[in-house]
Image 1 (cartoon, one colour):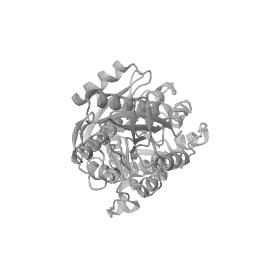
Image 2 (cartoon, one colour):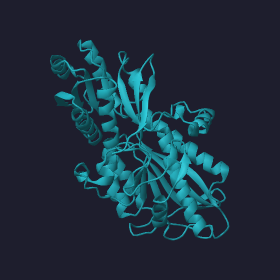
Image 3 (cartoon, helix red, strand yellow):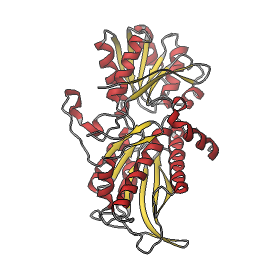
Image 4 (tube, one colour):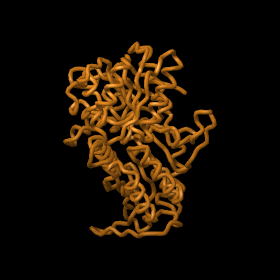
Length: 405
């Protein structure tokens, strides 16, 4: 999650002020000196999902450094403030509340988890602070709970994302499993979290619509690591494929225990499973599948500079699944700030928060992941999805496609 705040810098001293919930947010550089826009990162920087969180933090930092080097926004200098939510909704809400209480905060990019986003959205809306996630995929966040009945309504005018939804990802996965993997039966397991349940449901709906059959549906806790009972049930059902709606810390031991239990079916999951750490934690990951939003940045001409700059920066952690979408989310805010400043004679207006939200609705640029823009719900207009398979201890892309609902 990236948080933008503004402060006037005078020499080495940074002046900032805390404001009430009613503050509009803004600042100026009428004294002729640069306005500092602080971009914070809120992600799981520690804990089980820290591999993804560190990639998000580094990619956001790279965007900030690039903006400053290029002097992308005249009169504005960007700085970074990383925050750790450990993938916990309460932490995300506390961070959002704290930052939104400062009238200088102009926007937030993040978080990683859909469940964390649910705890942050109302805080952002109440304070008119733009919230952009590089990783949230649950459709409810933008379109409401009735999206399955095609009764779609934007939930929060301040919420955006640069990753496509599980309506798209789950359906793509279901079709890929049936048509490409040639699976005709599946055993489905989810971790009972917002993301996992939604992804598994979307996968099942598409898979069964094509003629596939769900042989069982089990639920586990995200912290579970002993899956022997469920593996036994799955082995009895003998599916062609096991699908897991959840994230790699649990998916890795689940996969290994499936193989150890004598079930030959591969495990398949979504972007929460698509991490190098899934392979590091699972000695028997070979042959498993995962889908992830977007196309592999390594295959995108638009990502060449990002990859080169990331390597040159010397980060010890990989950019992982959301590096490109994080950079684009940060850059979307940079571009929104740029327009707001340009439209106000080179300085931030008093109602900068509202202006940034307004500008984001119209943002369009060629980013790391392709053309970046948002639809009427705040969802990304880029619906590219990729299927991966573990081969020779690495994730290798097998199929990419634009998937429309």
